[in-house]
Image 1 (tube, rainbow, N blue to C red):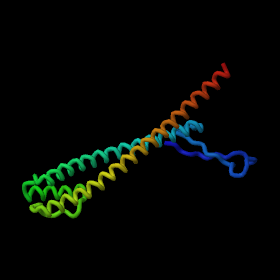
Image 2 (cartoon, rainbow, N blue to C red):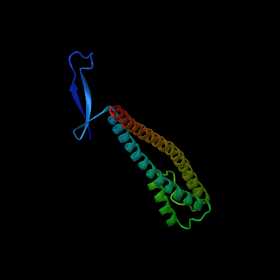
Image 3 (cartoon, helix red, strand yellow):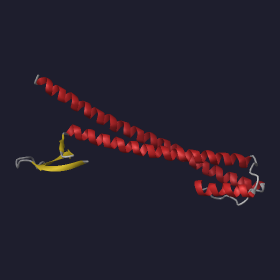
Image 4 (cartoon, one colour):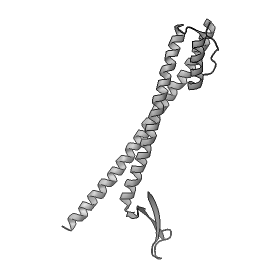
Length: 170
């Protein structure tokens, strides 16, 4: 865990610089480059976790859209054989996808059309949401990549500056 520690500087420091923040991990003081690397890697890990959660949610929604699409196809082809089967499908559509406006029966053409229309409207909204989720996922992945790249660059810079300092004393 990174913890800030404030230390005083001499009284002749310019206004506002009377103290600086030092940072420690497990009691060891961090240099600025180490702090930047630690913060970037932590941010990258957070973006990674958010990306995974978003991706998992998108996969679940994709499965729901596929199932709803299959039901829509069966309904359009008049392959739902009984009101009992429709009641089961309707309950799933209401519970899982929050589809509204579904008739209690699809025994007539008008009721089937009403059900198809309600399902298509919801599926279009879900498809738009899936596209927005994909853009958000890409944004999270980009932010993660930038954070890791910045952290890696800071670590490389720390290594090269230490090598340069060591070579001066050789």
